[in-house]
Image 1 (cartoon, rainbow, N blue to C red):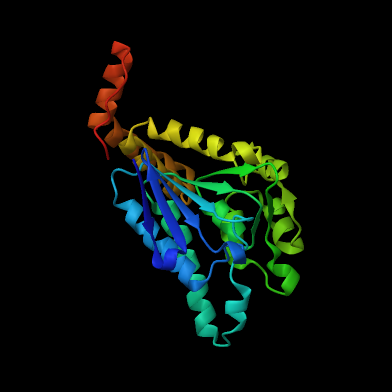
Image 2 (tube, rainbow, N blue to C red; image 1 turned 60 degrees about the horizontal axis):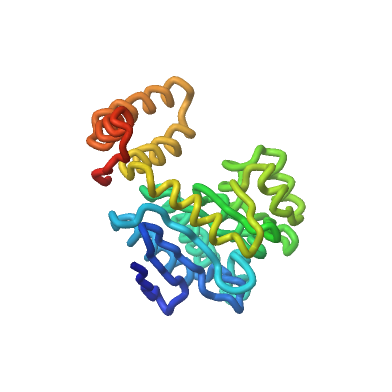
Amino acid sequence: MTATVPSEESLVLCQTEAGVATLTLNRPKHYNALSQAMLAALQTELDRAATDKSVRVVVIAGSGPAFCAGHDLKEMRSHTDPAFHKALFDQCGRVMVTINRLPQPVIARVHGIATAAGCQLVAACDLAVASDNARFATSGINVGLFCATPGVALSRNLNRKQALDLLLTGDFIDAPTALQQGLINRIAPQDQLDAAVWKLAESICAKSPLAIAMGKELFYRQLEMGLEAAYACASETMACNMNSDDAREGIDAFMAKRKPEWKGR
């Protein structure tokens, strides 16, 4: 069953099939630049997915020749009020935080270029699959603008020197380099990209939605903690998970050598 839901002025297209909601950035002539309206539309769709129990995985993709070229520079230059720019970057930050806090895993489907805030979007997603011709950069520095907010996501994916190399030079890296540095998880030929994304999404959809949601929430929370606090928090999560219907069902199914029937999150 496939349903297509138009978002605000169709800036983000939503297609849901077999538990996978694909959100497609839809400004192809502008390389899917993240305008205020585009960010609002993406926020709306992410918020909708968060409360939809039928959605097990969210995929973020881009229409046209690129994944996302970052913020809309023309829109940014048309405003001279610093309050507008602060509100825009705050709005973008909320989208990135929402991705982390979504109960479902979010996969970036990357083709073409992912630059500046587009690279930030890749880094903010839980997982990323890229075509073999994809390229990544935080190119703001080339126009006199340090990509500070993309640096938040990059520094949580790459090691410090790799992140700063991207941020200080604005140079592009190719898909194999992005894979080696930890920005993406998998690479596929362009004509097999959808199949690779779908394979990853299907693997996640086969797991307990409760365990996935609890595990994702814990994963990001413990990253900000000290070692002992992280273990204490993880132990509490595992104990709660162990006493859930899904864990009992999963263990029983494993011992009975049958497929588990998950209860849902």
